[in-house]
Amino acid sequence: MLVTRGFKGKRRQGDDARRRLPPGQFLTPEFPVLTAGPTQHTATDRWSLSLQFGGKLLGSWSWDQFNALPQTDLTVDIHCVTKWSKFDTKWRGVTIDDLIAAAGLEGSPSSFLMAHCDGGYSTNLLLSDLLGGRAMIATHFADLPLLPSHGGPARLLVPHLYFWKSAKWVRRLAFREEDKPGFWESLGYHRRGDPWLEQRYEGDR
Ligand SMILES: Nc1nc2c(c(=O)[nH]1)N[C@H]1C(S)=C(S)[C@@H](COP(=O)(O)O)O[C@H]1N2
Ligand SMILES: [Mo]
Image 1 (cartoon, rainbow, N blue to C red):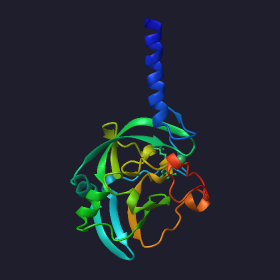
Image 2: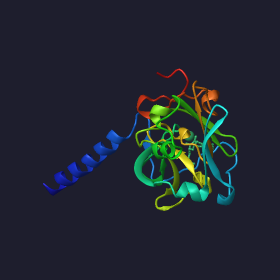
Image 3: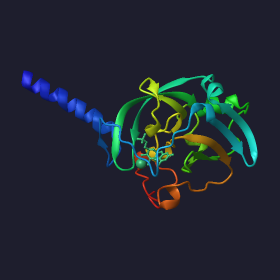
Image 4: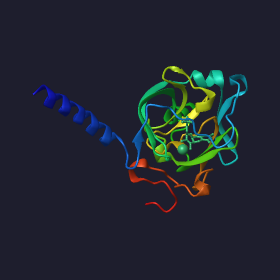
């Protein structure tokens, strides 16, 4: 009897993990670092985040100004295209909705956005994937300031897409009328990267 109950308990845990794991992924307790190129080290007194559309600057925040914006906590599962997933990662930062509002905009001026980072990395996103509290500029992980290796002082976090979309050391968000591929997207990765649809490479559904 006891043995059976213990066995069922374990089964339930396993089933829950399987439901939360997108196809082809495995679960890791680690937090691997994946970077194309060197880790960026940008001092917060030289850091700013800007929002632009075409040639126009829509908003710009120094580190102190950015940290005075409304802060949101988000606990989410993350999924890397190299097949590791990590559950219950805890982040704090400013949602893209709050950032757009802080710029005095009613909403997004375009359907697409390119995130640009220190070091030259970029990634393209649909605004529909960034709004509704689903994405943020994160400055904290597990209640601690984000380490440089994980994108500190600030990174984009779009947890429902493959983790290459969560651009580390992000500095500039450029609204765009047209979708253009970013760094990995121009090397054959998928434009959108939904892990539940296994949108890994260009041409995947
Ligand atoms: N600026 C920048 N952001 C980046 C990358 C990068 O190389 N440069 N790698 C991406 C990839 S492929 C992944 S899986 C995640 C890894 O984030 P982590 O190192 O915090 O796990 O960052 C993404 N953001
Ligand atoms: Mo990745």
